[in-house]
Image (cartoon, rainbow, N blue to C red; front, side, top):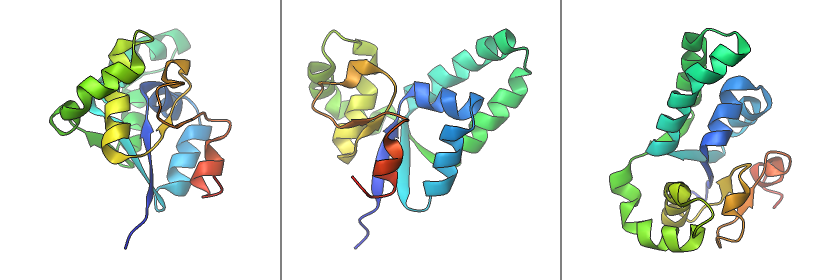
Length: 143
């Protein structure tokens, strides 16, 4: 029986994986023992933000997209048709904090796994959340 741990990645974590090294390093280090998931909308949001952020940083956006594609070889894209049956429950949980974040909560509910995020809007949703400064505890199996 495979008891592999899992985490849902919010768009801000995907962006950190593209523009930083720590998140990408954690994903690469733990990809064999933890399953990483990202809702399709988070991946699209990340793709939408990369050109703007690259421009601000004086970087070539094709490099940012290339790094994202590497991250997406580790993280499983979860399509809306898989999580949409959890929409009502997810919207109820996220409330008015940021209703656009419901897909992240829906995937977490569907898979019964926590969320890795820096977004405080998920706190109090009834789904466990991990921030980058503490997520390695979960990844190591210490939590």
